[in-house]
Amino acid sequence: MQFLIGLFVVALGSLISGTSPWPYKICKVYKMEQLMFISQLVGMFIVPWIIMFFICDVREAYDQIGFINLVICNLFSLVFGVANIIAINCLYKVGFVMFSVLEGGTAVIISTLIPLIFKGSGVFKNAPDITSYSGLLSIIAVLIMVISIILMSVAGSMRDKDMGKVEAKDHVPIAQKRFWRFMCIVAGVMCTGLLLLNTYYGSLLKDAAVSAGCYENFSSLSIWTFGMFGCIFINVLYSIVLMIKNNTYKIFSNMKEFYSGAISGVQYIFYLFLVGLGTPMMGALGASIGNGVSLSGSAIGKQIIGFLCGEWKGVKGRPVKLLVLSIVFLFVSIILLSLSSYVNK
Image (tube, rainbow, N blue to C red; front, top):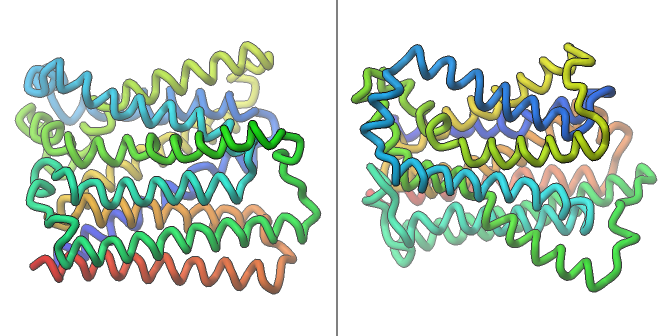
C-alpha cells in the first residue's frame, strides 16, 4: 500500500511539474527571461526558504550536513541549471521533435537506469542490480518510454504542420545542426541533476532537517532549499544577462504576470517536494521508478497545458492518434516500472 501511495504522490508531482510552464503560454507582456527570473528567485528561492525557517533550525541543519556535502549537492543542481540554458538554445536550433527525442530520451535512460548501477542513499542503496529481473523489466519500461517520447514528438510536429507553423530550425546550417543535436544529448544527461540529487543526497539532507526539528513529512523540502543554490544562481544570472541584452528588466511593470511567474516557480518546488516525499515510500526501487514516473508524468502535464492553451484546437486525424498512443505507451511503461518493484520482493 505504501508503494502505491508513493507512486501516486510522485505521479501527482510530475503532473504539477508538466503544467508549471503555463505562464510562458499565457503571459503577453513579460518575456521568457523575465518569467525565468521571477520563477527562480521568488518561487523557487524566497518562498521555500521562508517556509524552511519556520519548520526547522536552519543553522543546525547546515552543521549536520557539512560544507563539503552542501557543495556536492549544489553541483548537482548547478548541472541541472546549465542544462536548462543549453535546452533553451537547443530547442531553437534543432526544433521541437529532434530536441524532445534526444533530450527526453537521454534523460529517461539516465535517470531510471543509473540508480540500478550506482546505488543511491537511504532506502535506495538496496536497489537490485540492473541485471536482475527487476532491472531487466526496468530496461524494457525505459525503452517503451523512449518510444512514447518519439511518438509524442512526431505528433507535435504533425500538429504544427497541420496548423501551418514552421520551426525556427530551418535556417540553421547542417554542421551546426549536428553540433546542437549533440548538445541535446548533453542537456538530457545534465537535466537529470535534480533527480539524482534526490537519489544520492536526499536522505542526508532530510535527516539533517529532521534532526534540526523539522517534522519528517516536511523534511523533503530541505533537499530543494539546501541543494538548489547552484541551479537558481545560474538560471537567475542567465535571465539577468538576457534582460539587460533585450532591455526587458522591468519585472514590476505588470504585477499580474509577476505573480504568475512566482506561482510557476512555487509549482515546480512543490513538484520536487512531492518527489522527495514519494520516492522513499516506494522502497529500494523508488529512485529508479520515481525518476521514470516523474519524467513521464511531466510529459503528460505539458500536453495538458497544450490542450488548455489551444495548441490542439481543430487538430484531427493522425497527430491526435499518435498523441493518444504515446500517452498509452507512457502508462504501460509506468505499469512495468511498478511491476519491477514487486518482482524485486
